[in-house]
Image 1 (spheres, rainbow, N blue to C red):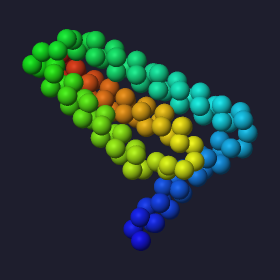
Image 2 (tube, one colour):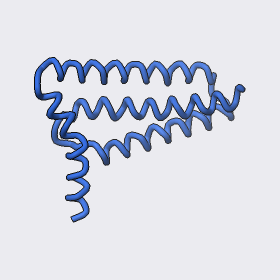
Image 3 (cartoon, helix red, strand yellow):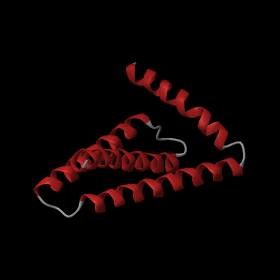
Image 4 (cartoon, rainbow, N blue to C red):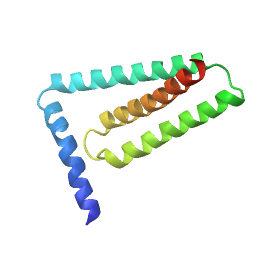
Length: 116
């Protein structure tokens, strides 16, 4: 019973996005383009912060480990929330975009805390 209500909540959240994307091929292409740019941008954000923090030592290894933990938690939460039936490729890209952003935000906070 609980699982059914959770499924209804996720469908009510993501159904408007699905209906908008399926209205025309242009909407679908806009959605793929925006999510793709966000994925590339967030991956670059993480890479830049990775290079700023520096090579692995005792201090940075814990930062990178906690960064990986934040990314894993974001992926697990997105797997629980996003529907698995329709538009799974878009949700897959959004999931990893959110994971990179979570890791990047964690590294940015740690970088600011350590170097300022």
